[in-house]
Length: 71
Image (cartoon, rainbow, N blue to C red; front, side):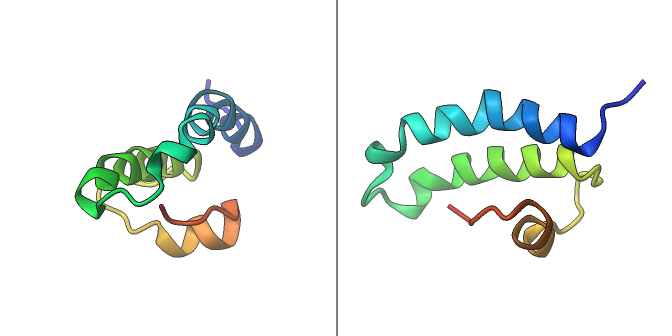
């Protein structure tokens, strides 16, 4: 059994995005090399929600369907 897109979005928002929002002030003026692992986590989370394959491009889907901004 798999989750619906709405249920998967709720889970990611609860477990991943809440941690990102919590530490958001620490990310101010951080180098792109330090932010890249966080962007990778968000990409994997978005790919899980949208049921993408490992190497599928998700940038336009993130903006259009999930209304997320890139880090």
